[in-house]
Image (cartoon, rainbow, N blue to C red; front, side):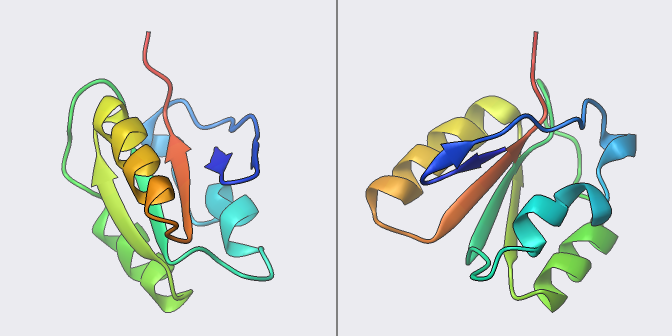
Length: 92
């Protein structure tokens, strides 16, 4: 998991582990990011609609993409001074 000021280990290694509870490091922030870039792994798979809805209820827009694209997108949004975080499933 990546924030503008820190990174932290995120135990999610598969889509089946990706829940709102797993994203608690983001949703529990005093000032939640406007955008959460989610890297779903090596290859793109359709986003988890329920999770997208749950994050929207928290005031967070979820941008879902493969992990490589998510890394690049996070960097671009950060360079634009956007309030962003990233949750990335690692690829081998």
